[in-house]
Image (cartoon, rainbow, N blue to C red):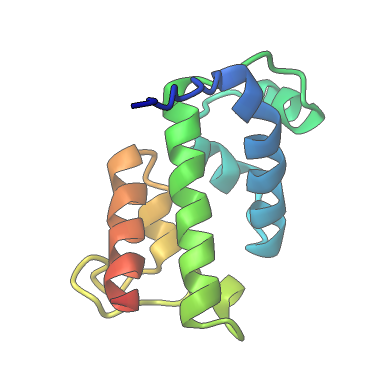
Length: 127
């Protein structure tokens, strides 16, 4: 009986594609630098600029987790509300998770758990 050996994907291998995808989503959502920094968990503009230029060896697990949630939110919205997906993140939301604020307000809290909550909400709406 043959067993498959899973290739371990290195964070270095994920860094470039993850950042390129994040910044494309940031453009689609019209995120300013402060919003991008909050979502990525950054406190330095120069770090953000370096990441935009691709001058980072490997993202931290935290940054990759944050980008993964953003990618899931983006994909879920493209499925749920394809015509208004990019605007949806800024619209006030009456769902209990958002308390009348937008999903973006929740996402820019700086806490990775808030990205998780938004992702779970989107996944729940998809069924």
